[in-house]
Image 1 (cartoon, one colour):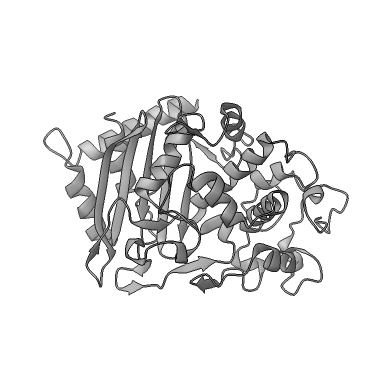
Image 2 (cartoon, rainbow, N blue to C red; image 1 turned 180 degrees about the horizontal axis):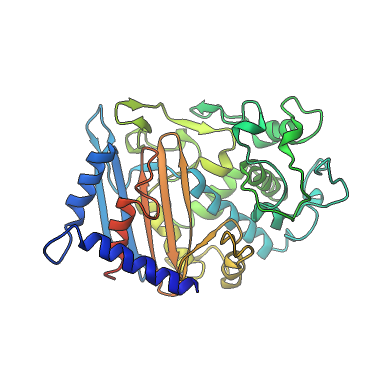
Length: 371
């Protein structure tokens, strides 16, 4: 069924795109630039990967408009929620080492006890955090959780161990009862940036290092992702894409409070290494970051209604991936393991065009269909 949906989606995309052209081939570059002008998007960096190489790339616009600094394949964009894919990778690395049982009570891996106060007898597991079924809030505005979406300049963001207990433990300085939902853990899926941050804290406690340092040592460096990091101080300012609320309103560089869920900064070139590793069952350039069984387990479908795997989301066809969005950035990454192909799109402004059914996405998918 999913394959049929994918085929129908591809046919729709090709028909829609060809209707705009009276000749045969579509001039993808001019069409993307046209959409960027219409939607007032500062820059787009996109590529298609096939058989362990970038077979097409399109990089357009400015990483910074005021400086007339063009985007390049080395320009680092904040990945927003695509950052969570590295969290799933980190957990599966610890699972391989026997350091974590994803179906065990997470209280075995934390220095404090975590329970939904409404359901104190129900354990919460890492699998629940990975599938967004822990019963922790997203949170959204109506949850009334104070200060959760504060943005921090430079690297002033507090450690997870400092802020997270204050939000989820009764009596914490930022605790509100609404941070816990009125259904038992494991029963319903509710996307949660707090839940994924809790998972990062578990990684810290098990491995004994800051989660950001864990990712650098165990994922970024082995994959030669030299222009990828959480911390701004580790990256060249000249290679950072400036975030924009709109083309006339730039933002300063920032880090989210829930940085494990949303604040990795990476370039198209760097991120392609991660994509190739996943497409190659955990290996990039001879270096293994995951065993094939771990990749397979990470991709297991847990919720057919939403396509949820372990953090990752299934899309129509033999496709799995994730989107990211927030102030200043929109990102999309898709893997097609059966064909050993993938695509990614980064932009330094929140917009719908880079997501499925969006114009830029359709144009990149058109390029993807050629390989």
